[in-house]
Amino acid sequence: MTPDKLWKKAQRRIAEMFGAENTGQVKGISSPDFVGRGFVGEVKQRKQLPAWLKSAMAQAEGYVDEAHPLAVLVLHETGGEYERDFAVVRLGDFANLLKS
Image (cartoon, rainbow, N blue to C red):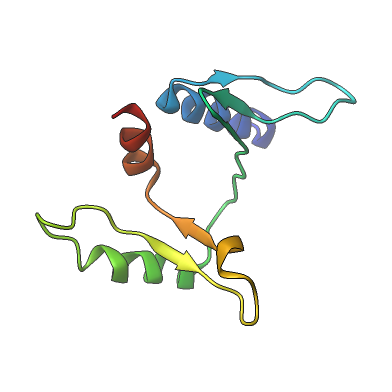
C-alpha cells in the first residue's frame, strides 16, 4: 500500500472510532481531518513514534489500577503555560470517553 493510501486509511479508521465524519481533503482548502460532535481532529501518521514518548506512556500505564483506569501522559514545555500543555491518552481510551 502506498504511503498516501496508508494515511487515508488511518484517517478514515480514526474518524470511525470517534463516530465522526471523515472530511477528507479538498484541494486548496485547509480543513480538519475529521469532525465530531463538539470536536475536530487532525491525524498525523509517522513510520515510528519517538521511543521516549512510548516509554513515558508505558510508565503512566504502569500505575493504572481498578480505581484509576485511565493513564494520562502530560507533555509540558519548560516555561510554557500549563493550560497549553498536551494531555496524551490512548486513542481507544479517548474514544470510549467520548462515547460515554
